[in-house]
Length: 128
Image (cartoon, rainbow, N blue to C red; front, side, top):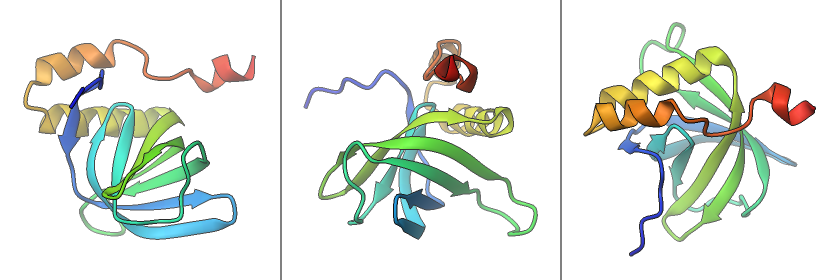
């Protein structure tokens, strides 16, 4: 299999909500995540190319655990699940995501170098 991923992907299991046109999918399970996206396990009605909003619920006390919010697009749908690319996120979400990847990466130094390269356009660049 040709692995063309450019970003470190780390195993990470948690629950995610996905809002897309006409639907809200709750408590989907993740398999892994990266600086650039997340893979959701199982069959769901999302379609390749579809835009969505992703809410990642980090483990911990429901009232105090961080919740990450990203804008995304469905990159691919397979029998195993759905890959979503992140398009944008707020700075706090970015810092939490960065820490998750670095703490779970087999090669944190390589992952750190990846974070020095932009994974997506900033909201300011997209609106100009």
